Image (tube, rainbow, N blue to C red; front, side):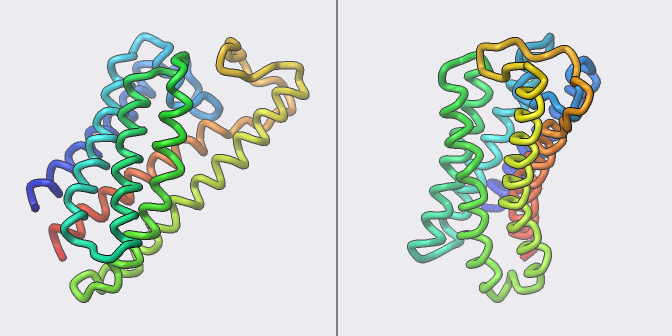
Length: 212
């Protein structure tokens, strides 16, 4: 089982490294308001694909690990949500922003992780050997759903601003070249915060498993 934990951590770290490198290979995608998925439309599609594949692999490996750690219906359901999230993350790499299944990838990958974190996290902290990690694990667990809410608000404000400026934001529309004056465009930062919180939770759980 320690092998699964190590592989999960390695996949998650590689995913974050791919995301970091993308900011240097594709500087034209401003991180403040351009979504991570948009990197697939640039010259580093292989790198964004690797990001999603490593991310998904890390989640699936962690779900396989936790299946034998947790017990009960709710925690087991959490493991299932984690596995589903991993499938969605991999689909995000296989189906880019212009693909009809990219939206399905989002629906599977993004909402499922906070549910998994809550259902799994609260059982883990009740296990004796995890008690020492209770505070940080719960903080990381709640960071997942908080980051999702922050991204939803940031995206809503940004899209509303673009709409008021006469710019339509849709899957088929070409993204604007710049942010019009007065538009609060922080959706990209919120998107990256969500990814960091999601992957950070997986990394923390895998790391604590190896040291619990």
